[in-house]
Image 1 (cartoon, rainbow over the protein chains, first blue to last red):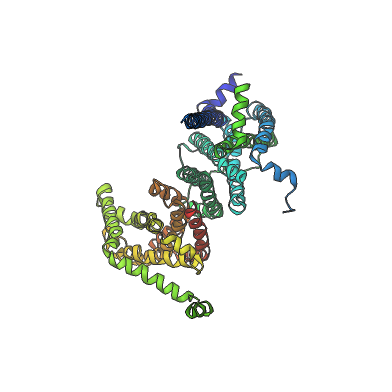
Image 2: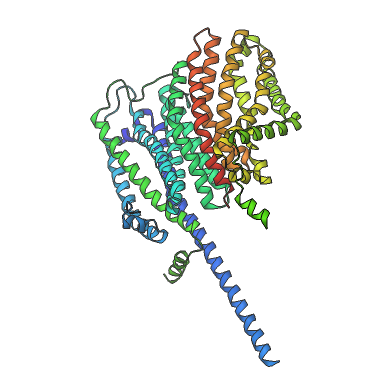
Length: 71
Length: 251
Length: 239
């Protein structure tokens, strides 16, 4: 076990190399997930804004037709 | 076009591919992890120390597969880019562009692990040997594609422009490599044979090949992962994307 | 009424390709002549950069001679970048690019003429000034012809490659740095062979081979690059 960790004296080179390998690909796997979450949040916002706009225009259309029928 | 089978045509539809990629992704990831675990056990524990380089040579098990992948992914990117440019298939555009960061990651790992291998072997963090120099130029090629893609507003036009760049790059890859090799011989670079004068021992070969396979499988997993997100980005306004939000809200 | 019928029946003469090329060349050279001071900018830039090296490294003649070939090549490459970056920007902005795309002449041909005219008006002055720059960096006299030959082959090659990249980045923000990033990897072989020829000449070794490789690459680029550039321009004007 000791030989494994010490790597014949080259531990200072071998282990950082493996660390870089795993860190880079851990990031490569996680980064799209973060981006996906961000995208879906943006999309949710967009959908909500559009719904709001539609409701507002429907409400104002109803008000217009109501006031039109009264006069 | 009768050449394209129906299932392939259906697959290029974004919502279908999104689901397909989601299902396939864990299979590729887990098989990559299992193979990597076995390969690294073979390389780090079972294989004996090299008589010239001691235990430092064990960096080979991540350095060489990464180098192979950096090249393989560039070619995949160029092929996907060609399909994107000629047939304007949205999925091809997304796949081509999502290859770039993965390829750049492998190239970066190749350079850093190569540098860490070089320090104990040649006494210096960097050396302008043919292979490392070619890798550095390859990194610039990847960064150029990523940079161009991010600089153009329209996602589809950006993907086509970056694909053209990738194609120009792939045509130049052999030229760049051979020119660097020639330059290296001109200036009597330290041509240290990283694998030693004899063929690689079988004890070292099978872990290396397993790691090569594992990195390929990881690339496919990561590509599927990224392509899903890429499709969402370019198809944000579509029904299937909005349905996803509704699903997520329910779940 | 009669004239309308006559107009319909008349065959409009097809624009002659050579006439189109002549017209395009005339336009390029005329525009360049009207702004002839602009041709000085790359020259001045090269002059300043070349002067920085003795300041940075000391005036030791032996050292300067050793590095002069390489420094001059890199300086020319850097001096080409600013003008390459704006190669198509003006055309894109004032709409003449769309005119080129719509013209009956083959776009690759028009692009080739445009790029070569651009090279003649921006980079050729640099090469003409090379003897002066060579003296400043103590380049040996017998190496100068080889350097000039290498530049005459390498710079059009770089201009053709740069044109493709310039078309791809036309209209994007930060296009200058993007162009430099994209051009550097592709320029590596050109620099290697051009510098190889100069270094060989400096050591008294045969230097024809690298020059021939450059010539072959230039011929290949003359044929292929205009098509890639045309494709890039079509992508650039898409909305």
